[in-house]
Amino acid sequence: MTAKQNTRLGIGLMVATTAVFAAQDGVSRHLATEYNVLMVVMIRFWFFALFVLAVAARAPGGLRAAARTRYPALQTLRALVLILEICVMVLGFVKLGLVESHAVFACFPLLVAALSGPMLGEKVGWRRWMAIGIGFLGMLIILQPGFGVFSPWALVPLASALLFALYSLLTRYVARGDAASVSFFWTGTVGALGMTAVGIWFWQPMTGPDWGWMALLCCMAVLGHWLLIQCYAVAEASAVQPFAYLQLVFASALGLTVFGDALRLNVAIGAGVVVLAGLFTLWRQRLREGETRP
View 1 (cartoon, helix red, strand yellow):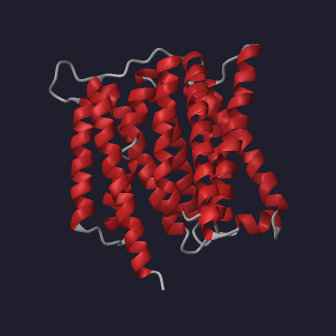
View 2 (cartoon, helix red, strand yellow):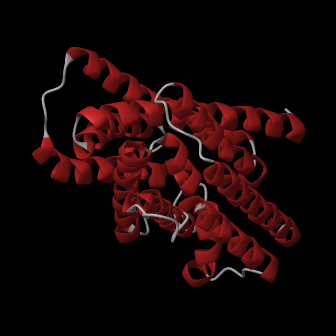
């Protein structure tokens, strides 16, 4: 295939990925409304770990190659940060709904850009700092601090965005010495162990229909990650990453039609500002990568 065809396919895969992840968030919200969040995430990671082990076993070198890392402590920290981020985000779905949670979470690329300097030593120019500042104004429009009674639950998806930004930066750091398959292995296995250590104490009996929803959630999690892997295999991340914002659109549509979430004007405006600022930072990153590429 030509590079153009690869990019087009990668965009299609990213759109499919965001649709699957948005649906997954809807199922997560339903289950976390009925059962403890920690138990729901724990079962999801059990299934994810089995998927990771199956993929690693079929790869060249098997499980031993997948587990061989130059950064065991950082890989462990990555996985623990991710499971904490997922638990916090699912809690946000329950307390705020899909629309507002995803509107706030959309700021994570801006947080990645802001933290890439101190954590990775990358240069952040004035244009990207300006975009980060504009994105912060968008966050203020969404959260509306000082207007009426400010709900502390509004900070939950913001905390999730910060955790995911930290996870993304740690992923980029360990990529300097570990293959993506190694990071994938450690994410699934350590994540399952970490969630089991906490979630097993909050076990609740589930009804038959909800076990069906749980099975669907696990399958969608695996499908979403598989689509994402295929996406990055056929196209550059900088070319397809802007389309990841479609998850905000899909999740909001699901929240409005299925869960009866309300779309407040300030949330729509603020989310638009955050997304535009995020797209600008991604565009600047792509330009910078093009300039440094031989």
